[in-house]
Image 1 (tube, rainbow, N blue to C red):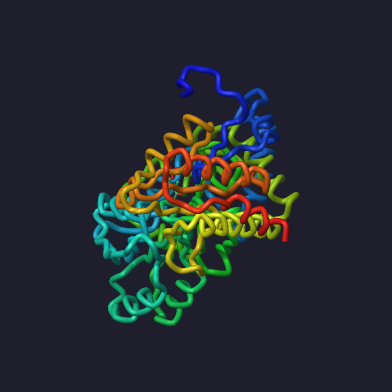
Image 2: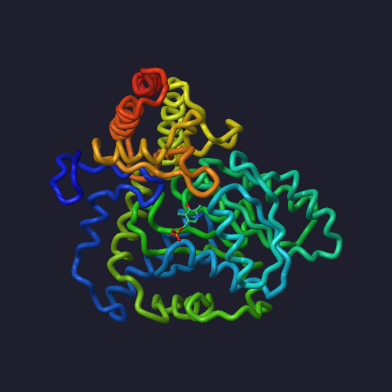
Length: 391
Ligand SMILES: *Cc1c(COP(=O)(O)O)cnc(C)c1O
């Protein structure tokens, strides 16, 4: 068995659902010497990025960029729009929605968390019912995850928007797209989302370190009434500085070089082609899982995630042991089961800079691991995926 300090031949396959494999072009762009963040060259890069990043969110409105992880951008969405003791509606779709709800409670929001089974998405019918019942408009925001990374379940944001419109309710719509943006089609403007939260390390082809709030006019109005304490995450100084293509504090300049390149890469492939590629590779993954005779955690096919597949092991088998074998023997990282599904599922990330051959490698690693760990399964998942891809 390989020791952690010994050379590991070949490339490590990073098949966790973020951080993802980074294109060499992005890594090279990031390796340029750091420049003066108040000089003309960086202002030009900022101007270019602030303009073209909107296309990725499908918005014409401002996109605020933070040095920070996705969790920070969650916090920014809360502290810039809401007031202490506001009621908010959230859905327990898995680990990340649970964490966002816990964060909201720390800001003294009154969280109504609709319980979930960690196998289904946020239900638009419940959104409509809860908002219709809320005649006095106590609920100030609805929170949803476009893609719940811990379970591989997507929520239908367009339908949640429709439900909010049908209920004629003025609540804000806050959406986490950390593991879906630039991988699964998402429309900030068309779906009238008020704050879209994202991070750099998943579909955006970058290392961890940047996070985002795409905002609506309605969110900017709510900002004016928000009394939450804020400093680092405050939108206003950033938006004011952005008018001069600057930031109120030192931005991570080399991450910006990478972001500049990453957006170009996404546009060269074409966003719609990027979505199609993710759909195809995700479907091939699901074909393999079914051929192994294993169960996909997501219950409803229309909610299957095109960026990550969580696979249930038969009872009595430990997914962390399987992951350890695959990591040690085959030099591949898979996502672990988190919280309620710890030890029960492993997760295959199939997003970002990823193609058919990388997927075949990942599936081969899983199939080898299933054999080594003596987990009951049928052989031929990899072959079934190849048959699907060759069609
Ligand atoms: C990864 C992820 C997060 C957490 O982001 P960090 O950058 O680790 O703070 C939140 N939500 C979703 C859906 C994620 O996939």
